[in-house]
Image: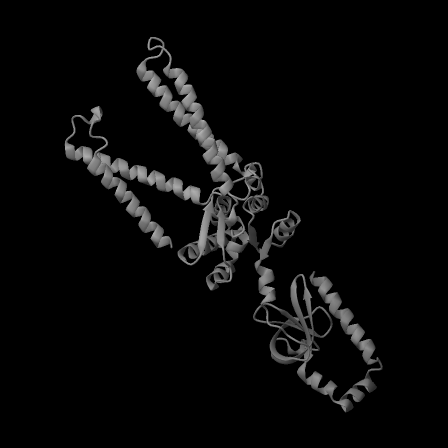
Length: 384
């Protein structure tokens, strides 16, 4: 689709340039009276190409505007031109002694451009206040419901996982990158701190990767809110204006956006949702990395970063152990898995071993279970 549009635009430029070359609109211009015919043809062709480029630039801006903005701009420009015409009539009926003919022509053309420009800009700015429902649905914006805009936050761009998600096709719609986000990324990339500078450059690399993918629709918008100083609040205001979804992995921005009524897609929540499901009783092999918070506990981590707390595994720190999952808890910090060594689980499954264990431990099984749950809740509270 993008290639077809590019071909049409190039053909339009060549067509106007060819018309200018053949029709020679500058042929009768007195300023070029000393020029040869071929020079006038070339100047006319250049003029046609410039006009075509201006029209294409206006078309590119008009395509991203809403229907309300286009209607407001059209009505405003028409009213401005009508007002300029009426004023031009008043100027034209003046006597030539008061206003010369050349001055009348200049004032009339200037007023037409001035009033048309003012009407276009004011009408486009106030077009959002138009209620299309009063028109009986004739000019209803049917594409408004189909718009799927997603505004990218600085944190999610630097994180880099958004590029992988977008390339897989699970993140549809148009990705919006505000200009103030690009400015913030550039400031981070130019920071004297080496760590911040690397993060900023990584974010710019991710944006370049997204733009190089022809399957992803990316738009950079110049919309800014000078009255708002914080970048997060600017993102929220832009999300309201475009009725877009903010893509981030910032927990605080997530909460504030939801309070302001703006939808949010959190990459961290997506990662947690895609973690493999582990059920109690399953076996897994993990590498015990360090000591846990409680006595004689060991802590391991899965490949996706999920923490695994293992009872009686302190002696196995720095070794690989087979464990049996006892419980899985979902917290705001992520998923946590609690388990015990596999050989202990096998021993406790045996009735004779269980009776032998009860001889040395006078506590009942219910008391031990309650103590284990209390210990798990204490670990979760310390992490949060």
